[in-house]
View 1 (cartoon, rainbow over the protein chains, first blue to last red):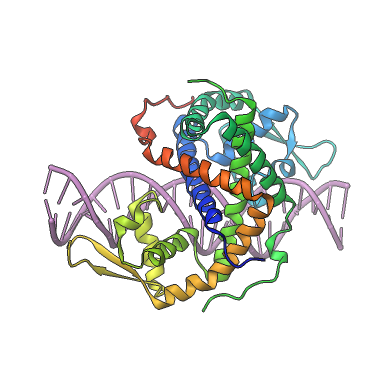
View 2 (view 1 turned 90 degrees about the horizontal axis):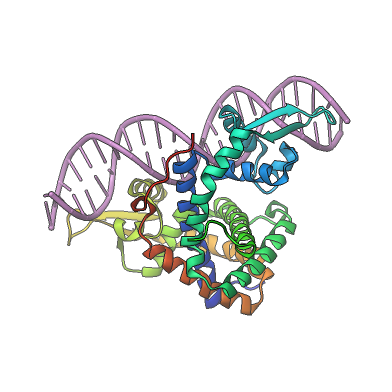
Length: 162
Length: 162
DNA sequence: TATTGTTATACTCTATAACTATA
DNA sequence: TATAGTTATAGAGTATAACAATA
């Protein structure tokens, strides 16, 4: 395990972190301005809209959020706005089945064009078609790799500075 | 301006957002565990360490944070820990000159190896050397493009959903 | 008047732990 | 005993607006 990053890696890391940070900021702003949604709320609606079939909270938590209570909170906000509905599952009484409502679909539709504009203008206008394909391949590989990775809490801990 | 993203763009966008989200999460965890630092605090220390010459708050704000009060807050936390020092500038009496302390350098050194490990293991272990170079080039271009972009508040506003 | 920076404040997101209930 | 989900709560980060001081 090398104890440094080479110059190209450093450049890649910082450029990646900063550009995505700028993109996230713009996207969050757009979602909030155009639809009063947090990014997580947008992800939840998008995921529900994608699947068409209702999902459980556990299904939703996967990949969207890092704590269950966080998801409960965001789902509560969506439900209060009438954008999703929650009901007890008939199959497993412990589970909560989440469905997107008509209002939820409308909200998503209201937000999507602006969302696409932002991503297009900020990210893709700077990249060639070849770049985009390469980026998709790389980042898919990286995502799969990270997902497969055991959480770092399983790794030996360094001791706290000072 | 297209009103949709093509499938490759969609794949690239979501893979980018999710993988960087995973990376950010791991990195934040590592910085907190190993050095009690937020990512912004790490960026401030790294920037000060890089420049060696003291910077003003405005210098620091650029690229690190999106509001001045946020920077003041984070700098206050760093100063309370003795990792940076702030003093009135002699050149411009309005400006605050920020310097990294010995303790600040120590803290940064304590945190850096673990930081590099995380980035190496999570991101670069999934990518070839060619990929890394391509990523560096693409993301540098994207970052420059986004930085040059006028803030979206200058663009025509869509009206709020509902 | 514009700029630098801080303060006060409020809000959102997130996380931990305790809890209920079902399997 | 393990899993699904919620609640209560506390903490961290961020932003806005008002402000003081200097250019």
